Picture (cartoon, helix red, strand yellow):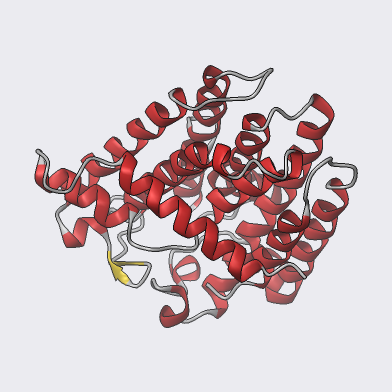
Length: 295
């Protein structure tokens, strides 16, 4: 029987080890910058995006875990950069992340900005050095992550989220924010793993559909957790969406309605995995975990 907790722990450990090697040492100059990068990147977390990347690779080739670790590490670098910048006073102004002081609190605002910038830049360097199976090249991986992270991806979603605070958004606008702010990086995680493993066009399309459904379900689950969780559970402040006047799925549908929407998306994600050549157990389990998690 597949044990997701063991799987996540294995991927998290392997990812941490890879990240430790790929980052500059904490005592190398500029020391304060490198310490801030390591503080934020190696400060724990579920490593969900690396797990999705590796699981997608294994759904194409069951023995491809190690091959998928470089893009998994690159994803976590880029994800951590988004968290550092999201926490800044100009953005969400959060003091806690993963139960610890945020980067700008532990160091200072300027160092936090530069640490995020450096992690973003390093993520593309890691992808450029990644070995891919045909028909893909490192340039394909770099392009994939750049599209997911840029002004029509994560950054665009964040901008729309900022502009929407305190305004009555349409469901179409809410979907845009959730799809890009959160969903695009999850989509990239799955696609990078599949591409690294040499997925054919049909398999990549199935995995893309899976990723798009769980990406939206993930953000809906986040909306629910923000409304119902505690700071102790979340490792950060709770109830911030309501306080900021943000339009969320909870605001639009209520807690139970949002949960039903996430469950429907998860069912569709499961269906998309049919016919893949490798081991899909981890992807099925991760889809269920995304909406059942408590933090």
